[in-house]
Image 1 (cartoon, rainbow, N blue to C red):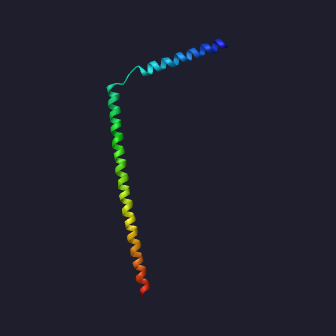
Image 2 (image 1 turned 135 degrees about the vertical axis):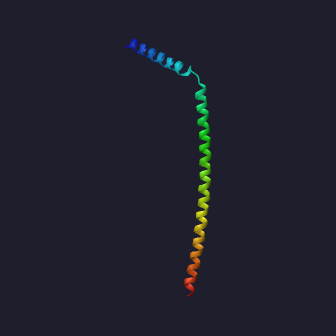
Image 3 (image 1 turned 120 degrees about the vertical axis):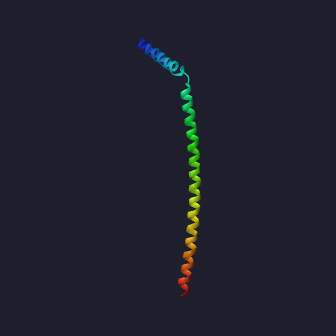
Length: 85
């Protein structure tokens, strides 16, 4: 049983090391490097787009707050006019 266990561990170690050598030995091709650069550029573009959209959202929220304040002020004026009669 111990002999089988040792053989199994040796085989497992050999398979693991073989996989590491085969997986890491190929390097990166020019095509893969170009694809990586393209993806990085897309990420940067998307980050900029998100930032722009957040700025737009902030501007719209400010407009909404201003409009709500104007409505509240006008409503007070309407109420004051109604109470004068």
